Length: 198
Length: 246
Figure (cartoon, each protein chain N blue to C red):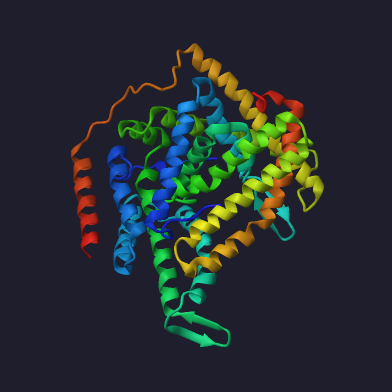
Protein backbone atom coordinates (compact mmCIF):
# COMPACT_ATOMS: atom_id res chain seq x y z
CA UNK A 1 0.00 0.00 0.00
CA UNK A 2 1.89 2.99 -1.20
CA UNK A 3 1.05 6.29 -2.73
CA UNK A 4 3.63 7.19 -5.31
CA UNK A 5 5.22 10.56 -5.89
CA UNK A 6 3.63 13.46 -7.65
CA UNK A 7 -0.05 12.95 -6.86
CA UNK A 8 -0.91 14.38 -3.47
CA UNK A 9 -1.13 18.11 -2.70
CA UNK A 10 1.27 19.86 -0.32
CA UNK A 11 -1.21 19.95 2.58
CA UNK A 12 -1.68 16.16 2.60
CA UNK A 13 2.07 15.50 2.26
CA UNK A 14 2.79 18.02 5.03
CA UNK A 15 0.13 16.63 7.36
CA UNK A 16 1.49 13.11 6.73
CA UNK A 17 4.99 14.21 7.68
CA UNK A 18 3.78 16.14 10.74
CA UNK A 19 1.76 13.27 12.21
CA UNK A 20 4.38 10.64 11.37
CA UNK A 21 7.11 12.80 12.92
CA UNK A 22 5.01 12.97 16.06
CA UNK A 23 4.55 9.18 16.03
CA UNK A 24 8.28 8.59 15.49
CA UNK A 25 9.09 11.17 18.18
CA UNK A 26 6.89 9.44 20.75
CA UNK A 27 8.47 6.12 19.77
CA UNK A 28 12.02 7.47 20.14
CA UNK A 29 11.20 8.96 23.51
CA UNK A 30 9.77 5.70 24.85
CA UNK A 31 12.28 3.27 23.36
CA UNK A 32 15.01 1.81 25.57
CA UNK A 33 18.47 0.87 24.26
CA UNK A 34 17.74 -2.83 24.54
CA UNK A 35 14.62 -2.43 22.40
CA UNK A 36 16.41 -0.61 19.59
CA UNK A 37 17.98 -3.69 18.03
CA UNK A 38 14.83 -5.74 18.59
CA UNK A 39 12.61 -3.18 16.88
CA UNK A 40 15.06 -2.68 14.02
CA UNK A 41 15.16 -6.43 13.37
CA UNK A 42 11.39 -6.71 13.74
CA UNK A 43 11.30 -4.13 10.99
CA UNK A 44 13.60 -6.36 8.90
CA UNK A 45 11.22 -9.29 9.39
CA UNK A 46 8.28 -7.05 8.43
CA UNK A 47 10.15 -6.00 5.29
CA UNK A 48 11.10 -9.57 4.35
CA UNK A 49 7.59 -10.90 5.11
CA UNK A 50 6.26 -8.63 2.38
CA UNK A 51 8.15 -10.88 -0.07
CA UNK A 52 5.70 -13.69 0.77
CA UNK A 53 3.07 -13.97 -1.94
CA UNK A 54 -0.13 -15.85 -1.22
CA UNK A 55 -1.69 -17.34 -4.35
CA UNK A 56 -5.29 -16.28 -4.91
CA UNK A 57 -6.82 -17.87 -7.99
CA UNK A 58 -4.96 -16.68 -11.08
CA UNK A 59 -3.12 -13.93 -9.21
CA UNK A 60 -1.34 -13.51 -5.89
CA UNK A 61 -1.10 -10.87 -3.20
CA UNK A 62 1.65 -9.96 -0.83
CA UNK A 63 1.29 -9.63 2.93
CA UNK A 64 1.19 -6.29 4.76
CA UNK A 65 0.99 -7.40 8.42
CA UNK A 66 0.95 -3.89 9.88
CA UNK A 67 -1.49 -4.95 12.63
CA UNK A 68 0.85 -7.80 13.55
CA UNK A 69 3.79 -5.37 13.72
CA UNK A 70 1.64 -3.10 15.89
CA UNK A 71 1.10 -5.93 18.39
CA UNK A 72 4.82 -6.77 18.48
CA UNK A 73 6.34 -3.27 18.38
CA UNK A 74 3.75 -1.25 20.29
CA UNK A 75 4.61 2.44 20.41
CA UNK A 76 7.73 1.88 18.29
CA UNK A 77 5.69 0.85 15.26
CA UNK A 78 5.95 4.27 13.59
CA UNK A 79 9.74 3.80 13.69
CA UNK A 80 9.63 0.15 12.60
CA UNK A 81 7.33 0.89 9.65
CA UNK A 82 8.93 4.25 8.80
CA UNK A 83 12.45 2.91 8.41
CA UNK A 84 11.22 0.03 6.25
CA UNK A 85 9.39 2.47 3.99
CA UNK A 86 12.45 4.76 3.85
CA UNK A 87 14.57 1.89 2.60
CA UNK A 88 11.93 0.89 0.05
CA UNK A 89 11.70 4.47 -1.19
CA UNK A 90 15.47 4.81 -1.48
CA UNK A 91 16.30 1.43 -2.97
CA UNK A 92 13.24 0.08 -4.72
CA UNK A 93 11.31 3.16 -5.82
CA UNK A 94 8.24 1.89 -3.97
CA UNK A 95 6.43 4.91 -2.56
CA UNK A 96 8.82 7.84 -2.37
CA UNK A 97 10.57 10.40 -0.24
CA UNK A 98 8.00 13.19 -0.55
CA UNK A 99 5.26 10.65 0.26
CA UNK A 100 7.22 8.94 3.05
CA UNK A 101 5.30 10.83 5.75
CA UNK A 102 1.85 10.03 4.49
CA UNK A 103 2.74 6.42 3.62
CA UNK A 104 4.14 5.88 7.11
CA UNK A 105 0.97 7.37 8.58
CA UNK A 106 -1.27 5.14 6.42
CA UNK A 107 0.43 1.98 7.68
CA UNK A 108 1.38 2.95 11.25
CA UNK A 109 -1.70 4.69 12.60
CA UNK A 110 -3.82 1.54 12.13
CA UNK A 111 -0.96 -0.45 13.68
CA UNK A 112 -1.01 1.75 16.82
CA UNK A 113 -4.80 1.55 16.99
CA UNK A 114 -4.63 -2.25 16.75
CA UNK A 115 -1.94 -2.32 19.45
CA UNK A 116 -4.02 -0.20 21.83
CA UNK A 117 -7.18 -2.15 21.20
CA UNK A 118 -6.09 -5.76 20.65
CA UNK A 119 -3.08 -6.03 22.95
CA UNK A 120 -5.20 -5.80 26.16
CA UNK A 121 -7.69 -8.18 24.54
CA UNK A 122 -4.88 -10.64 23.88
CA UNK A 123 -3.62 -10.62 27.47
CA UNK A 124 -7.12 -10.78 28.98
CA UNK A 125 -7.80 -13.99 26.95
CA UNK A 126 -11.51 -13.12 26.79
CA UNK A 127 -11.76 -14.32 23.22
CA UNK A 128 -9.61 -16.97 21.48
CA UNK A 129 -6.17 -15.85 20.20
CA UNK A 130 -7.12 -16.80 16.64
CA UNK A 131 -10.13 -14.49 16.79
CA UNK A 132 -8.10 -11.57 18.16
CA UNK A 133 -5.48 -12.16 15.46
CA UNK A 134 -8.00 -12.23 12.65
CA UNK A 135 -9.72 -9.06 13.83
CA UNK A 136 -6.35 -7.35 14.28
CA UNK A 137 -5.09 -8.26 10.79
CA UNK A 138 -8.41 -7.44 9.15
CA UNK A 139 -8.89 -4.12 10.97
CA UNK A 140 -5.36 -2.87 10.32
CA UNK A 141 -5.56 -3.45 6.56
CA UNK A 142 -9.11 -2.11 6.47
CA UNK A 143 -8.07 1.12 8.21
CA UNK A 144 -4.96 1.44 6.05
CA UNK A 145 -6.96 1.04 2.85
CA UNK A 146 -9.43 3.61 4.19
CA UNK A 147 -6.66 6.11 5.00
CA UNK A 148 -5.07 5.47 1.61
CA UNK A 149 -8.35 6.19 -0.19
CA UNK A 150 -9.04 9.25 1.95
CA UNK A 151 -5.63 10.74 1.24
CA UNK A 152 -6.10 10.14 -2.48
CA UNK A 153 -9.49 11.85 -2.20
CA UNK A 154 -7.89 14.99 -0.71
CA UNK A 155 -6.38 15.63 -4.14
CA UNK A 156 -9.78 16.50 -5.55
CA UNK A 157 -13.09 15.16 -6.70
CA UNK A 158 -11.60 13.71 -9.86
CA UNK A 159 -9.67 11.23 -7.69
CA UNK A 160 -12.80 9.76 -6.04
CA UNK A 161 -13.12 6.88 -8.54
CA UNK A 162 -9.41 6.03 -8.18
CA UNK A 163 -9.80 6.13 -4.39
CA UNK A 164 -12.77 3.74 -4.55
CA UNK A 165 -10.91 1.44 -6.94
CA UNK A 166 -7.88 1.30 -4.63
CA UNK A 167 -10.09 0.50 -1.63
CA UNK A 168 -11.94 -2.25 -3.51
CA UNK A 169 -8.66 -3.76 -4.75
CA UNK A 170 -7.52 -4.14 -1.15
CA UNK A 171 -10.54 -6.10 0.16
CA UNK A 172 -9.09 -9.58 -0.53
CA UNK A 173 -5.94 -8.48 1.30
CA UNK A 174 -7.98 -7.70 4.44
CA UNK A 175 -9.16 -11.32 4.60
CA UNK A 176 -5.78 -12.88 3.79
CA UNK A 177 -3.92 -10.63 6.22
CA UNK A 178 -6.53 -11.42 8.88
CA UNK A 179 -6.08 -15.17 8.38
CA UNK A 180 -2.29 -15.02 8.36
CA UNK A 181 -2.18 -12.76 11.44
CA UNK A 182 -4.59 -15.10 13.27
CA UNK A 183 -2.54 -18.23 12.67
CA UNK A 184 0.87 -16.57 13.04
CA UNK A 185 -0.23 -15.07 16.35
CA UNK A 186 -1.47 -18.44 17.57
CA UNK A 187 1.90 -19.94 16.56
CA UNK A 188 3.86 -17.27 18.46
CA UNK A 189 1.63 -17.63 21.55
CA UNK A 190 2.53 -21.33 21.55
CA UNK A 191 6.24 -21.08 20.71
CA UNK A 192 7.46 -17.76 22.11
CA UNK A 193 4.75 -16.02 24.15
CA UNK A 194 7.24 -13.61 25.78
CA UNK A 195 7.46 -11.78 22.43
CA UNK A 196 3.88 -10.61 22.89
CA UNK A 197 3.37 -10.29 26.60
CA UNK A 198 6.44 -8.29 27.59
CA UNK B 1 19.59 -10.31 -2.25
CA UNK B 2 21.66 -7.31 -3.21
CA UNK B 3 19.89 -4.35 -1.65
CA UNK B 4 21.71 -1.27 -2.87
CA UNK B 5 22.26 -2.50 -6.41
CA UNK B 6 22.90 0.97 -7.83
CA UNK B 7 25.54 1.96 -5.28
CA UNK B 8 28.40 0.09 -6.93
CA UNK B 9 30.08 1.85 -9.81
CA UNK B 10 32.70 4.46 -10.46
CA UNK B 11 30.85 7.27 -12.20
CA UNK B 12 31.42 10.90 -11.12
CA UNK B 13 28.14 10.69 -9.15
CA UNK B 14 29.30 7.67 -7.16
CA UNK B 15 32.32 9.52 -5.83
CA UNK B 16 30.45 12.65 -4.68
CA UNK B 17 29.98 13.50 -1.01
CA UNK B 18 26.68 11.88 0.10
CA UNK B 19 25.77 14.97 2.15
CA UNK B 20 25.87 17.09 -1.00
CA UNK B 21 23.84 14.50 -2.89
CA UNK B 22 21.13 14.45 -0.20
CA UNK B 23 21.02 18.24 -0.02
CA UNK B 24 20.76 18.52 -3.82
CA UNK B 25 18.21 15.72 -4.00
CA UNK B 26 15.59 17.08 -1.59
CA UNK B 27 14.86 20.47 -3.24
CA UNK B 28 14.70 19.04 -6.73
CA UNK B 29 12.23 16.26 -5.81
CA UNK B 30 10.06 18.52 -3.67
CA UNK B 31 9.89 21.05 -6.47
CA UNK B 32 9.03 18.33 -8.97
CA UNK B 33 6.40 16.73 -6.74
CA UNK B 34 4.59 20.00 -6.11
CA UNK B 35 4.73 21.48 -9.61
CA UNK B 36 1.57 21.57 -11.71
CA UNK B 37 3.28 22.76 -14.83
CA UNK B 38 4.02 20.28 -17.58
CA UNK B 39 7.03 22.28 -18.81
CA UNK B 40 8.69 22.41 -15.39
CA UNK B 41 8.16 18.70 -14.78
CA UNK B 42 9.39 17.79 -18.29
CA UNK B 43 12.62 19.74 -17.73
CA UNK B 44 12.97 17.98 -14.39
CA UNK B 45 12.45 14.62 -16.08
CA UNK B 46 15.10 15.51 -18.65
CA UNK B 47 17.45 16.35 -15.78
CA UNK B 48 16.72 12.97 -14.18
CA UNK B 49 17.35 11.15 -17.45
CA UNK B 50 20.63 13.08 -17.83
CA UNK B 51 21.82 12.32 -14.30
CA UNK B 52 21.06 8.61 -14.54
CA UNK B 53 23.05 8.65 -17.80
CA UNK B 54 26.02 10.25 -16.04
CA UNK B 55 25.71 7.56 -13.36
CA UNK B 56 25.87 4.93 -16.13
CA UNK B 57 22.49 3.35 -15.41
CA UNK B 58 21.01 2.89 -18.86
CA UNK B 59 20.34 -0.81 -18.38
CA UNK B 60 17.64 -3.40 -17.74
CA UNK B 61 17.70 -2.97 -13.98
CA UNK B 62 16.71 0.68 -14.31
CA UNK B 63 13.83 -0.24 -16.65
CA UNK B 64 12.65 -2.85 -14.14
CA UNK B 65 12.63 -0.26 -11.35
CA UNK B 66 10.76 2.24 -13.49
CA UNK B 67 8.20 -0.46 -14.33
CA UNK B 68 7.45 -0.73 -10.58
CA UNK B 69 6.79 3.01 -10.46
CA UNK B 70 4.46 2.86 -13.42
CA UNK B 71 2.28 0.00 -12.16
CA UNK B 72 0.57 2.39 -9.74
CA UNK B 73 0.01 4.77 -12.67
CA UNK B 74 -2.27 2.19 -14.31
CA UNK B 75 -4.90 2.88 -11.62
CA UNK B 76 -4.80 6.55 -12.53
CA UNK B 77 -4.88 6.07 -16.29
CA UNK B 78 -7.91 3.80 -15.82
CA UNK B 79 -9.92 6.35 -13.85
CA UNK B 80 -8.76 9.94 -14.22
CA UNK B 81 -9.41 10.54 -17.94
CA UNK B 82 -13.05 9.65 -17.31
CA UNK B 83 -13.56 11.38 -14.00
CA UNK B 84 -12.00 14.77 -14.75
CA UNK B 85 -14.54 16.97 -16.43
CA UNK B 86 -13.56 19.19 -19.31
CA UNK B 87 -13.28 19.41 -23.04
CA UNK B 88 -13.72 15.89 -24.45
CA UNK B 89 -10.85 14.35 -26.37
CA UNK B 90 -12.81 11.36 -27.51
CA UNK B 91 -16.51 10.84 -26.96
CA UNK B 92 -18.20 7.59 -27.69
CA UNK B 93 -21.22 6.12 -25.95
CA UNK B 94 -20.94 6.17 -22.16
CA UNK B 95 -17.18 6.71 -22.19
CA UNK B 96 -15.85 10.21 -22.62
CA UNK B 97 -12.15 10.90 -22.32
CA UNK B 98 -11.45 14.43 -21.18
CA UNK B 99 -8.39 16.29 -22.37
CA UNK B 100 -7.74 17.72 -18.90
CA UNK B 101 -7.82 14.20 -17.43
CA UNK B 102 -5.28 12.86 -19.89
CA UNK B 103 -2.98 15.84 -19.25
CA UNK B 104 -3.25 15.29 -15.49
CA UNK B 105 -2.30 11.63 -15.91
CA UNK B 106 0.63 12.58 -18.09
CA UNK B 107 1.77 15.16 -15.53
CA UNK B 108 1.69 12.65 -12.66
CA UNK B 109 3.46 9.98 -14.71
CA UNK B 110 6.23 12.43 -15.65
CA UNK B 111 6.66 13.53 -12.03
CA UNK B 112 6.82 9.99 -10.63
CA UNK B 113 9.37 8.87 -13.21
CA UNK B 114 11.50 12.00 -12.79
CA UNK B 115 11.66 11.54 -9.00
CA UNK B 116 12.47 7.84 -9.38
CA UNK B 117 15.39 8.72 -11.67
CA UNK B 118 16.73 11.28 -9.19
CA UNK B 119 16.41 8.74 -6.37
CA UNK B 120 18.42 6.18 -8.29
CA UNK B 121 21.11 8.65 -9.37
CA UNK B 122 21.59 10.72 -6.20
CA UNK B 123 21.01 8.82 -2.93
CA UNK B 124 21.06 5.58 -4.93
CA UNK B 125 24.71 6.00 -5.88
CA UNK B 126 25.81 5.96 -2.23
CA UNK B 127 25.81 2.92 0.02
CA UNK B 128 23.26 2.87 2.85
CA UNK B 129 26.16 2.97 5.31
CA UNK B 130 27.42 6.27 3.95
CA UNK B 131 23.89 7.66 3.62
CA UNK B 132 23.27 6.87 7.30
CA UNK B 133 26.53 8.58 8.08
CA UNK B 134 25.46 11.62 6.04
CA UNK B 135 22.09 11.69 7.83
CA UNK B 136 23.91 11.90 11.16
CA UNK B 137 25.88 14.88 9.86
CA UNK B 138 22.61 16.47 8.74
CA UNK B 139 21.25 16.24 12.30
CA UNK B 140 18.70 13.44 11.87
CA UNK B 141 18.04 11.99 15.40
CA UNK B 142 20.86 9.60 16.31
CA UNK B 143 18.65 6.80 17.62
CA UNK B 144 16.60 6.84 14.43
CA UNK B 145 19.65 6.64 12.18
CA UNK B 146 21.17 3.89 14.33
CA UNK B 147 17.98 1.87 14.06
CA UNK B 148 17.79 2.49 10.33
CA UNK B 149 21.33 1.20 10.01
CA UNK B 150 20.64 -1.92 12.09
CA UNK B 151 17.50 -2.51 10.08
CA UNK B 152 19.43 -2.31 6.82
CA UNK B 153 22.28 -4.43 8.17
CA UNK B 154 20.03 -7.26 9.33
CA UNK B 155 17.53 -7.22 6.47
CA UNK B 156 20.14 -9.09 4.44
CA UNK B 157 20.53 -11.65 7.24
CA UNK B 158 16.77 -12.12 7.66
CA UNK B 159 16.42 -12.46 3.89
CA UNK B 160 18.93 -15.32 4.01
CA UNK B 161 16.84 -16.97 6.75
CA UNK B 162 13.74 -16.48 4.62
CA UNK B 163 15.36 -18.11 1.61
CA UNK B 164 16.66 -21.00 3.70
CA UNK B 165 13.19 -21.66 5.15
CA UNK B 166 11.66 -21.46 1.69
CA UNK B 167 14.14 -24.02 0.34
CA UNK B 168 13.29 -26.27 3.27
CA UNK B 169 9.57 -26.03 2.50
CA UNK B 170 10.15 -26.92 -1.13
CA UNK B 171 12.49 -29.77 -0.21
CA UNK B 172 9.61 -31.23 1.80
CA UNK B 173 7.31 -31.06 -1.19
CA UNK B 174 5.37 -27.90 -0.44
CA UNK B 175 3.74 -26.31 -3.47
CA UNK B 176 1.78 -23.13 -2.92
CA UNK B 177 -1.76 -22.97 -4.28
CA UNK B 178 -5.07 -21.37 -3.36
CA UNK B 179 -5.96 -23.40 -0.28
CA UNK B 180 -6.30 -23.15 3.45
CA UNK B 181 -3.27 -25.42 3.76
CA UNK B 182 -1.09 -22.87 1.95
CA UNK B 183 -2.38 -20.07 4.16
CA UNK B 184 -1.63 -22.10 7.28
CA UNK B 185 1.90 -22.97 6.13
CA UNK B 186 2.68 -19.35 5.26
CA UNK B 187 1.24 -18.17 8.59
CA UNK B 188 3.53 -20.48 10.59
CA UNK B 189 6.35 -19.50 8.24
CA UNK B 190 5.72 -15.82 9.02
CA UNK B 191 5.52 -16.53 12.74
CA UNK B 192 8.84 -18.40 12.58
CA UNK B 193 10.46 -15.56 10.63
CA UNK B 194 9.50 -13.06 13.36
CA UNK B 195 10.66 -15.45 16.11
CA UNK B 196 14.03 -15.92 14.39
CA UNK B 197 14.48 -12.16 14.08
CA UNK B 198 13.56 -11.72 17.76
CA UNK B 199 16.01 -14.37 18.93
CA UNK B 200 18.81 -13.07 16.77
CA UNK B 201 18.19 -9.52 18.00
CA UNK B 202 18.76 -10.71 21.57
CA UNK B 203 22.13 -12.19 20.59
CA UNK B 204 23.10 -9.08 18.61
CA UNK B 205 22.14 -6.81 21.49
CA UNK B 206 24.18 -8.86 23.97
CA UNK B 207 27.17 -8.72 21.65
CA UNK B 208 26.76 -4.96 21.25
CA UNK B 209 26.39 -4.49 24.99
CA UNK B 210 29.61 -6.35 25.61
CA UNK B 211 31.31 -3.87 23.27
CA UNK B 212 29.98 -0.88 25.16
CA UNK B 213 26.90 0.02 23.06
CA UNK B 214 25.05 3.02 24.50
CA UNK B 215 22.33 3.60 21.94
CA UNK B 216 24.43 5.08 19.17
CA UNK B 217 27.28 4.26 16.88
CA UNK B 218 30.07 6.85 17.17
CA UNK B 219 31.20 8.67 14.05
CA UNK B 220 34.80 7.91 13.24
CA UNK B 221 35.43 8.91 9.63
CA UNK B 222 34.38 12.36 8.49
CA UNK B 223 33.53 13.67 5.10
CA UNK B 224 35.35 16.58 3.59
CA UNK B 225 34.04 18.65 0.73
CA UNK B 226 36.14 18.65 -2.41
CA UNK B 227 36.06 20.90 -5.45
CA UNK B 228 33.84 18.58 -7.50
CA UNK B 229 31.27 18.46 -4.68
CA UNK B 230 30.97 22.24 -4.71
CA UNK B 231 30.79 22.36 -8.52
CA UNK B 232 28.01 19.77 -8.43
CA UNK B 233 26.14 21.69 -5.71
CA UNK B 234 26.30 24.88 -7.81
CA UNK B 235 25.11 23.05 -10.94
CA UNK B 236 22.13 21.51 -9.12
CA UNK B 237 21.33 24.87 -7.52
CA UNK B 238 21.33 26.51 -10.95
CA UNK B 239 19.15 23.74 -12.35
CA UNK B 240 16.57 24.12 -9.56
CA UNK B 241 16.57 27.89 -10.20
CA UNK B 242 15.93 27.35 -13.93
CA UNK B 243 12.99 25.05 -13.19
CA UNK B 244 11.54 27.58 -10.75
CA UNK B 245 11.81 30.40 -13.26
CA UNK B 246 10.16 28.47 -16.13
